[in-house]
Image 1 (cartoon, rainbow, N blue to C red):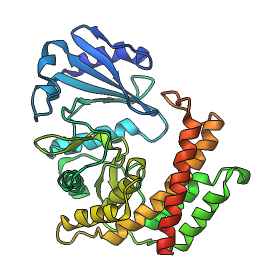
Image 2 (cartoon, helix red, strand yellow; image 1 turned 180 degrees about the vertical axis):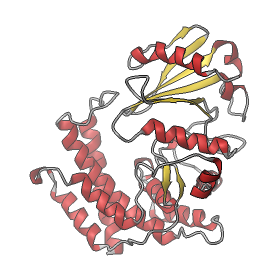
Image 3 (cartoon, rainbow, N blue to C red; image 1 turned 90 degrees about the vertical axis):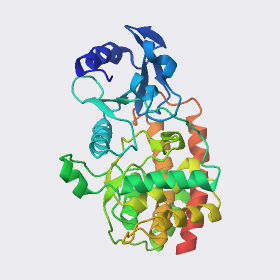
Length: 348
């Protein structure tokens, strides 16, 4: 039995003032703990004490899903993270698609940070990439199922979604977004290596044609995908909304967790996704590869921007930066510059 709105607000009223520093403890029948959730949100898990024995077994829609809830306070940075997540979860729930947690509560006014509450999704979580073709096919099948949700379906059930938070309509649009990341930076803050990347990107002449629009989840970080016996599902839908499905695959293959994939593997992943597409689908291997190329440059520019913003303390975070953030960012920037130069040389 899911908690009612009044019960949830009683719990949230208790948690909100202490969410940043809350230790693991019990309170009024709930076991409460902080969960690692990045720097833009605070994620808490609340488990009903009387149902703990059945939680988290990953076997499907069992006690673990109903006994536990996930509470996410998000950074109010204008991206409406909690609103995007709640709307996507409501749409999937209304369509009876078992691809994500069930939505329970949303508010962007009652607390200092917008909050979304959902069922805790039991299952296996791994930090690493899929290790076998079967695992890759499970991941791609999940993403294809998400991409089958269209604006027409949303209209039929009366749920409105916005564009995804990062939602380029074409690879060329993503090129413009990469330039926009560094547009306000002083010229002396831009490294020659990044300037070279952006020049190569402009010479690649990536497509500006727009294609199909569908639900995309974005944020392909590997722990967001929950491995279950009844099919993979995913969490962290705060960037989700309408967008180009081809972008989702290109974005995934340019994500830091996937950056070490060799060319043969990422090309196989692209072909495997497209091989399972429905007749008439406009997603092609060339379009996905173009998004991947632009996204590699976007990440290089993002690292450059982060170095500048974090040094000026202008980013703002709900969770403090790690002590070694500078080294981490420099190392990641170097990897992305190398990868982007390699990719743009291949298409220029």
